[in-house]
Image 1 (tube, rainbow, N blue to C red):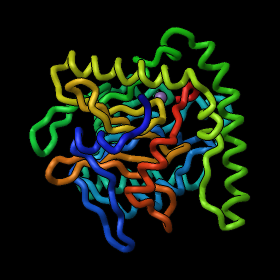
Image 2 (cartoon, rainbow, N blue to C red):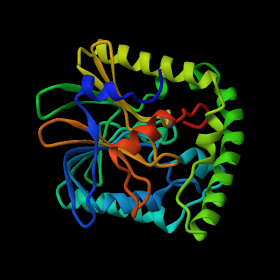
Image 3 (cartoon, rainbow, N blue to C red):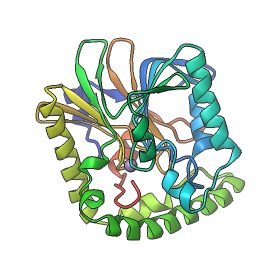
Length: 290
Ligand SMILES: [Mn+2]
């Protein structure tokens, strides 16, 4: 149910992005979500590292870019978080069209949907048209999250445990970085053990594909559950951008309208498609703090 099988690429026509050192990758559209700026565990530095190697005519920020839930409690705002905001605004100044679809962690921005702030269009949801004329619904997705919708206290309870895992993850990775080891996700590893998560992911993906059907579009791009995916669900193309807290992923649309999965491990080691498939299939979902 979760993750990726080889055949998905055949069915969806999608692929895994390849980055070449020193070359700027040009996309028609770039989709990024769940940066969670303001949360210490945000991989803002890895995002900056990625962002300077990529260009796009249009960028969708698919929600949970700024983590106001965290900022309200105890902000963990670093220079790299400022840098992300500045780099994004700079792209807007240079002519990139940018659309921000606020998520649940940045839900206060939903009050400003319909407005343009700093050149960024704020929208509750949007319909994107690909280069080959397909219509895709762009939505964060939390409104289809059964945990957030039906039991907010449960989501909040889970939040504490999840943040502890993320905190450990960050500190463990600091040690690993110093030791010259690559990034490793503890919380992703822990969640691998949560079996019900599989059902949760399946239900979420199904709900989103139904919503796309309701809009009479060919696909949906969402974020929220920190589980990247490109898959076909019935006649709907389901795409999840993943996140920049654990997995460091994004989605690109090529100039001819093909979708590519971007898996950014770190600046030096970009994964090859074969490896990416391996990683993706063993990836695990996120329940609590999406
Ligand atoms: Mn979310």
